[in-house]
Image 1 (tube, one colour):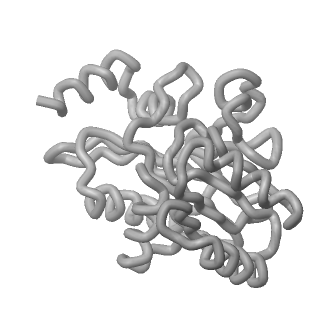
Image 2 (image 1 turned 180 degrees about the vertical axis):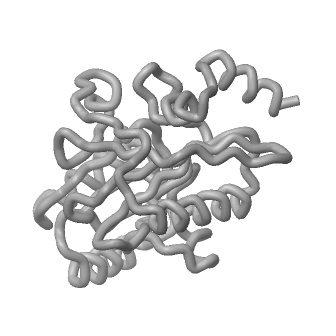
Length: 216
């Protein structure tokens, strides 16, 4: 889902998320872009993530640790979209993901935790290196899980989603941040969505059949 639209939508509904700033190279004048960058970088600590509003599997995303890296990161993101998201990076947060199947009845999986092998879960690590690990269920408290489940269901319904989605959170210093919703989550043998649903006693073929059934 478009990160610009999604993050703005979450703001309207007062759902907690990481600080961010949108740069729109189609609408904003050069001076406006620079003012937004200056305002954001003055109040935000590094690292900062620079993301295209629309891409897939972390393509076009750069993690920067100093201001001198920003211009190159923006140019990289612009090869995928003219709307760019600057996002505050957290220091070693828990990355929690939830899978949802829904039409008339909603099925929310137990939370899974992605434990990174490095600072940033990029395309190579997702599909080539496979160095990160997945823990199901996630090592979080019952109260943390209840809050995440509530926010996952609420966000799924607010976005008027159908059939299935994966919703991702960051957990840092006992606070939940909703990161993004993925309405077409990955389905490889190491992807979180099928692994979470398998933990709910659904086989891979049952998951696929259920999604097809929900489409009719």
